[in-house]
View 1 (cartoon, rainbow, N blue to C red):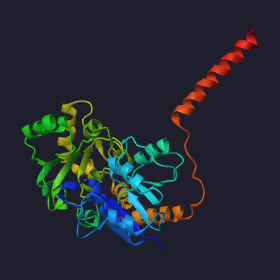
View 2 (cartoon, rainbow, N blue to C red; view 1 turned 60 degrees about the horizontal axis):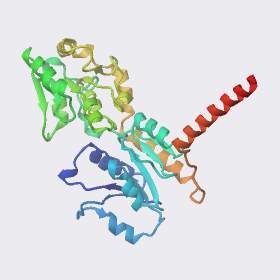
View 3 (cartoon, one colour; view 1 turned 120 degrees about the vertical axis):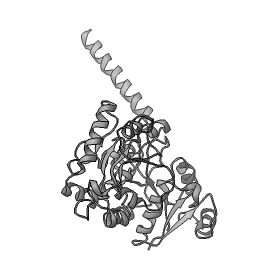
View 4 (cartoon, helix red, strand yellow; view 1 turned 45 degrees about the vertical axis):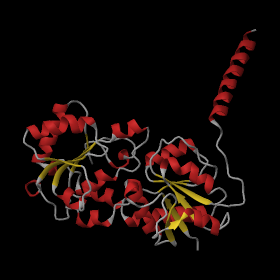
Length: 345
């Protein structure tokens, strides 16, 4: 039975982010399928294995499956793990690096899958969407689960400051407050996010500017899904992986389009009558079922089984270099032009 190592720089506060949460959660689930450990490579921590030690203990190629995911550090990690069995657990896209031939890509969204299907079309590709942690599904006050209606929710509009746009924070929030709505801008650590979302009628998430300014993508966009699991009406941007789950005017509603007045009017209407703005119970249940731990484990089980059947002693296919494809296309155009010219003579 193979062993799986999930690589993260560390788990201390300086590394806390959505990517770390996903790595920790996924590692716990994969551990139900294969023996799995978390491995740090920047900060040595007493509770976890350390990459340098492991590389000395097991010569390449070894039997271990190494899972890398940490954005800009992936190329460096791949070089250190050369000759070993490596999986790229692809979150965001846009980092600009290429993958060695044969390295499987486990993409967490269709947006990321499409990116690598273009950039590494000969690498094995799999779709493994992230799962919601159980407390969102077990305690979320949504349709059919002790839904809290408008009068029971003390917060009219909830905005999380991190990744939010200047438009939302600088224009929309003041406009909504001016009309008397209770708007909470959450900016620090919250001990119980489920309770905060359960207490909110409308949730606003506008990350397009944030990711565009960083030159990267919204890798998996769980916050709007978490909000819907708690019965919130969601107004959001639809960039990158958010388009995997949010269908405009059906599941979520676009924010920051048209005009400020139109946003204000729609949000006020949704605060007054949330049930008219939520997705149907059937649609929401279908969406949430696709992001359960059971669904994630099923996809990982299938993907792991597939890569086990791939021969390790054969040369993997390589993609054609872009410059060569374009050169061949130009040569083809020149040859066609010359043929037409000759045929006229």
